[in-house]
Amino acid sequence: MKNLEKGKLPFWIKLGYGGLEGGTSSAWNLVYIFFLYFLTDAVGINPALAGSVLMIATLWDAFTDPAIGIISDNLKLKWGRRRPFLLIAALPFGITVWLLFTDFHLGFAYHVAMVILFFTFFTMANVPYQALGAEMTQDYNERMSLVTFRSWWMQIFTLVSASLPLVFVDIFGKALGNMSAGWSAMAAMFGAMSVLLILLTWRTTRGYELFPESTGFRFRDIYDVIRQNRTFRYTLGVWVFSIVALNFVVSTAIYFFTYVMGFGESMMGMAFGVLIAASLIYLPIIDYVARKKGKRIAFIVFATFWGVLSLVFVLTIAGPQDSTIFWISLVTGGAVSACMVYMLGWAMIPDITEVDELMSGQRREGLYFGVMAFIQKIASAVTLQLIGLILAWVGYQPDIAQTSEAIWGIRILMYAAPVVFLIPAIIIAYYLPMTREKHQALCDILKLKKENKEYDITPIKDLF
Figure 1: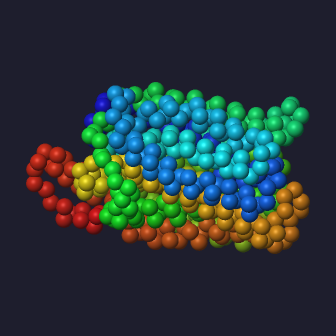
Figure 2 (figure 1 turned 60 degrees about the horizontal axis):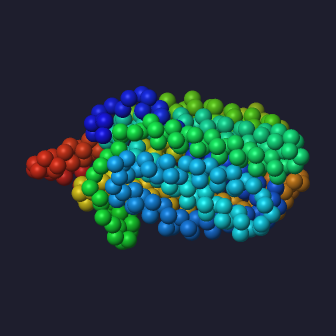
Figure 3 (figure 1 turned 45 degrees about the vertical axis):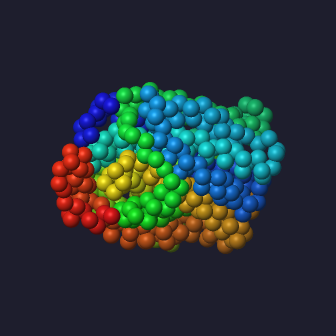
């Protein structure tokens, strides 16, 4: 391994490490921004049934997410224990991105099967990738820097995957003679891009692997890491509630833009573009606050900012006549929500692994990131299921003018629903035991333990 545990990572390594994030984020956003819309408006599936597609597929992830993390913890190859997964998953992942948005008229079961395959290969790439980032450096601020690079890649390719797909669907659809072919061609293009970006990270991170002893595993370890690691439980709570809040915004946005604001494809692309472009401005601001005040304080500040503005906007944006306030909402609360959840969540999770290392004597990044990935997908799937059910309940019908009840329902899903979940996230973050000072003390204790010297855990006992 080229870097020291507390050393700085070279600029080009951090830049290349983020490439996979660009590839998987673009695909992830295709799914969580457009897939429900694709199923309801392009394929013609009932909204309540369409929302259940991801929920059913997520049951498979109850096994695959922790399993991939655990397997990567115990893999012993000369190429490392994380990077081989990136190479294996790259091409199948790109193919499943294409198949997700290709309608072969095989019905509901086909779409469930494609989401299962997508989740499987996403997990094979993403869980070892996140665990690799936790291994590349154990420095509190350097981890924040690594996450910031990831976030730049994520936001740039989220900008691409949020603003351009419908444009490409229209272009390809007209060229190929039907919109169904347009969706398929668009997805094939994004799938190919994902493959190349995953391979970029695989190549760049060569030599930055850890080669620890195998960790060993019992299935009850999944339960034990939640029960015994207090820091993990608090971080998990912050992560779950904030992910649900964000997914309400992301998955409702296309309905809000279409039926509340009356946007066509070009204006919708512009709205997504403005949202993500504005979020790029917040990346260095969030990074600065997290470095100076800590990740916990940064989360509380920006989540509160997002929540307060959401309550204002749900009452003040009722249709096209409120376009000025709408654009303000995109560059303020919308932009913050688009980057702060993943950026700060990703930065908090690696610090958990040192707590576990002191408790267990093992480095089990894969286990933790596997559990977190599964929880993330459960939260996302439940959110989509709720959105589908609520849309059906308020009388949403695709491709027609919506009733006032449906418009109100979409407004509430976009702005009010996230606040319901932001409140517990902020409360849990307030009591989160991990701070920069405690993490440094934890790393110092781990060093003493490895050197067989005496150490005192009193300053960090509330982490357990």
